[in-house]
Image (cartoon, rainbow, N blue to C red):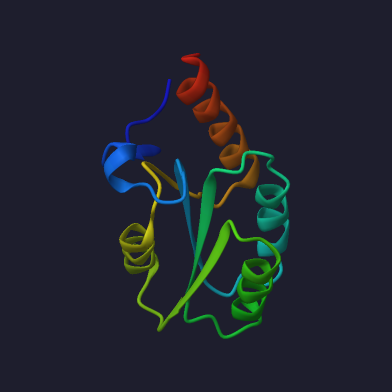
Length: 130
């Protein structure tokens, strides 16, 4: 089963989506230069074309900002947004305001948990498997 806060349907896809984006992954980032590449690489190798990753750099003081820009240049599914540090809640709100998908996934700190949840969500969304 899915926790109601893990995945959120925004508007019906016909009203909200652009460029056939079905899922928006919102990823707040703050001083994560040592760990963020692994997370982004795992997302980047996904073969599903109709999702986006919205990386919100929340005023990082390390090279996280540069890493976000690099991934946005490498892959059109990745979008980098930079803002002054306002905290994770504000970063998630920025992500919601920029999301184009009909479904929203808030990335979690634990990559294994996140990827397992994303896989389960895909099965549910496209095949109806719970």
